[in-house]
Image (cartoon, rainbow, N blue to C red; front, top):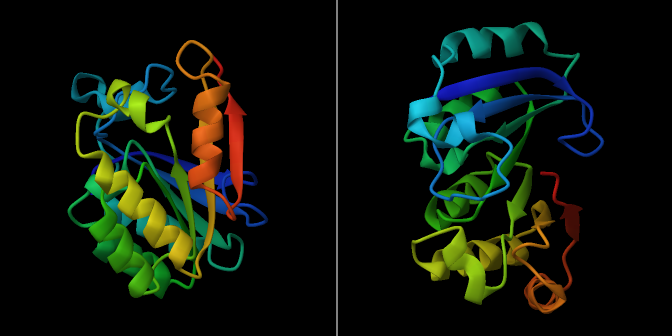
Amino acid sequence: MQIGGLQKLSLIDYPGTPAAVIFTQGCNMFCPYCHNPQLVYPYLFEKTLNENEILYFLKKRQGLLKGVVMTGGEPTLQNDLYNFIKQIKNLKFLVKLDTNGTNPEILQELIREKLIDFVAMDIKSSAEKYKLFFTGNLNLIMQSLHIIKSSDIAHIFRTTYDTDILNERDLDEIKAITKNSKHIVQECRK
């Protein structure tokens, strides 16, 4: 695991659950308003944290913390994410995954194996403007959205409303595809 950071306690990142937040390095999107560029751009990466030390920290916090948030960057880019989350689940923590939805196969496997308890997926824009964030296949995003919506896992969709990029028509399109699911629009802070 390329772990770029650890927040030892968060009361807001996992709704209703005191949690640690683990930040992974690497992302396949390039959001102009990104607040974690040190996790996106390899030339800004800092020394990674030791996976075993993170697990040891979590073991010491059993009974105090209830959850762990896997975020980034984009956690699903990590080759050993499955095994790392399995170790966290063995410690009896709830696990929330923050994702951009570009790896539906990994998402499906984590849900199927009951390794995650909550998913927050960012919907960056309307289909027309996704190319500003992601040069890959937009169908991957739609597959992830469908996987999440058709599962029984707790979830939320999030959109950062950057008025330099998005407009009300874009938000209407996003709301249409996230219909019948919780969707929040976050103000963009620059």
